[in-house]
Length: 215
Image (tube, rainbow, N blue to C red; front, side, top):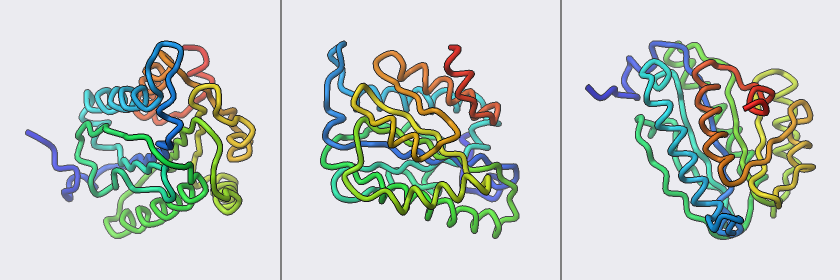
């Protein structure tokens, strides 16, 4: 029987809110040394993550998932918390600029709004995770988003995990967003390994970059 992820039963356990911030700017159409575009790798990797999660009904119902993509002039909510139903939706398309700053601000709004839902339902939840993946540099101002997430992390109200895609992702900017956790760099076969590790991290509710580096 398919589980209704937005029924009252869905809110009966402790939730693990996870927001993906995914760069879908035009540069994600770049081709790596194996002849595969970054956007194709992202699609395959994200599908791997979802399939791994769905293998465990307890974990899949604990996960509260949202996906924000940023390309063009403004970020978009690709998958809202309210739309998450355990499906394997993964059809990201690359185009436009890299509005990372606006994406961070939108993620903050998503977190705050979801906390209100938890409060209304009397739901316990773990510290939200935000996974930011980008292959380049922001084309808008990220200062406000950086201040917001620095405050959230200092108050231990969110874990921000940053990932550079390919060789052009700016590690210095990603370090500015989270000075306490070294960003990763992924490319090619690293994508599947990364998303497999991430799904295991959700299962264990432990986002430990040192574990990933030993894989």
